[in-house]
Length: 233
Image 1 (cartoon, rainbow, N blue to C red):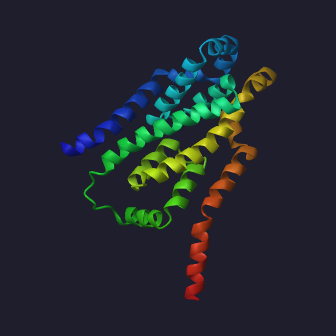
Image 2 (image 1 turned 135 degrees about the vertical axis):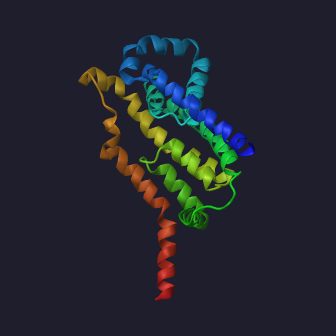
Image 3 (image 1 turned 180 degrees about the vertical axis):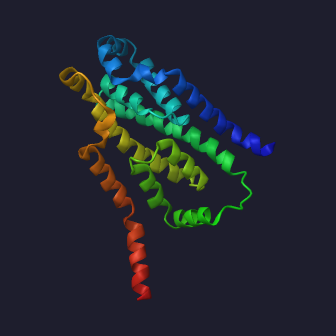
């Protein structure tokens, strides 16, 4: 019973995420829908800037905390409506808050483990604990890793709170800045081409900088391994 209670916060968050996804709530943030209502939405933001900003933060917090797949459309909407700088700031704050909620819920669940982890799990933990900063930054900067999945993984690896916040604030903001910048240009792209696809995130101009930064995060690990090999030889 105690084990179930420890998992309850995480299960509730996952349940909310599944419910939101099934309800089609994300369809409201489809770039084409935002573009069609951009004039009225911008007017509403101009009239109520504080409430609008808090709403963007709240939506991002909810999306990230529940591990909602497709929460990227909220970031894109922020870029379309608030612009690159303001959109990045608002979405980054919401992302950090949501990640913290999911992190604490996950850590609560995993802290009740019996400690008898499989050999592979212990090997992964040993690698992480040897280079915690590099591992955390790498996981946050690689665009192929789901944001919510990385948050749960870092909680499972018992990542210290200070490192989790640092990696999430830096890596999350870098990702969001790219996505917000793309969102800011979607209105013109939709007007010119009539439709857009999220395949634009597979473009090398987006992926290469992110992969480059993720590779840099691994440099300390590579150098350490090279030193170890040189000592053996």
